Structure formats: C-alpha cells, structure tokens
Amino acid sequence: VVITAGGTREPLDPVRFLGNKSSGKQGVALAEAALAAGAEVILIHAHMDVAPPSNAKLHSVDTALELRAATLSAAAGADVVIMAAAVADFRPSTVSTGKIKKRDDAADPVIKLVRNPDILVEVVAHRAAQNLSQLIVGFAAETGDDEHDARSYAEAKLARKGCDLLVVNEVGPGETGQEKVFGRDGNQVEILARDGAGPVQASGSKRQVADAVVRVVAERLGTT
Ligand code: C5P
Image (cartoon, rainbow, N blue to C red; front, side, top):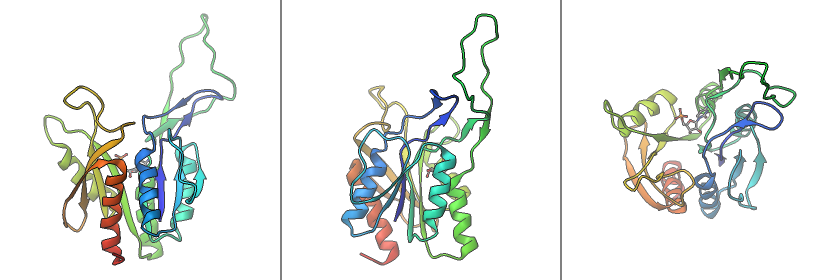
C-alpha cells in the first residue's frame, strides 16, 4: 500500500517556500491502520508535524514534483494507492538562487505561479496504461458555497479524478469559528465510491477514520 501524506513546500528562494496547513496526521494514521491490517506500507511524505511510523518504508520529499516522481515509481508495484498528501496546485515559476532582497529602490516582487501536475490523475492514467489491478483512493477537502454543497463538489471531483474512492471532509471554520480539520486530532468524512456504492460515513479520531478507510479498501480487495 502506497500512501502519500503531509504538505508539499514549493521553494521561492533558498529560505522561503509556499506551503499549506496539512499536518500529515491523517496520512500517518492511514499508514498505521494499513500496517495494523497487515499491509506492507510505503509512506511518501512531504512536510508533517508528526513522526511517521517506523515500520513503514519511508520516503521523504519536499515539493510536488518530488512527490510525483516518488509516487509514480512506487505506484508501479502497489495494490493500493492512497493519496492523502496536500499537494500544492501551483509552484513559483522560478526559484531565486539567492535570498530575495527587500529593496527601497526597487518595486516589490511579484510571484508568478505555474501549475503543478495532478499526481492523482496521473496515477489513475498510469494504472490504465499499464493495465494494473490497483485500487486508488483520493482525498478531498471541500467547502460548500451558495450554489452547491460540499458533497456535490466532491462528486464532481471523484468523476474528474477517476479514482475508485474519494474520502471527503468539509474544511473551514466550524460552529465555534475554529478550523475543523487541518492540524486537529479528529475528523469526520464521507467515503464516496465511483461505482456508486455507499457512501460510508466515518468520524472520530484520525486513526478511527483511517481504520474505516482501510476497512472499505480491504472489502474491495476481498481481504477482510
Ligand atoms: O484537486 P484537489 O487538490 O482538491 O484534490 C485532492 C486530491 O488530489 C488528493 O488526493 C491529493 O493528494 C490529490 N492531488 C494530487 N496532485 C495535485 C493536487 C491534488 O495528487 N497537484
């Protein structure tokens, strides 16, 4: 089982980067749950606030492009790929070799961004090209808006990405005004399936959510 976790960091110069709020907790919980279920786990992790499990095979990366190379190579031999990493959609188009200077005699810098590849879509394409029998699980942090709720955005994403399962959580401020998911210990998700089964609801600690995801995966592999 190949699992990606954590948040990528896209460098601007030798000391600065564009990052995100991912703590890596959900990805690490997934690795622990898969290990507890008897799987051999490769954890490809970008920046995390928590330690990875020592009994997984670990691969540490910084950027989306590094995560992509490591994931595509590991996915070639995987039965299951679970993409829990928060991958930057964009990276700075150029990386300054020296620290970007603050200068009174020059205009403030403008950062131009370019799109990163969608690794999940590439893993799905790789499976089709190689005719692999592989289960692919994506994650989606969604917010609803005036037009559509988080679920309908998630269903559209599942169709667009082409993965088998999409684990969806609603992010953003909860009723108390505090962030509901990022960096927190608990989670509440819906596991949507492309074949229309479910959806399965899971909530509790990130480990409990991970156990639920691993259970759905194991049922589909016929290994429960
Ligand atoms: O499109 P969005 O970022 O919401 O999709 C989330 C899912 O896609 C996650 O599983 C994430 O790991 C994956 N993803 C990716 N490559 C990107 C962006 C997201 O694999 N560039």
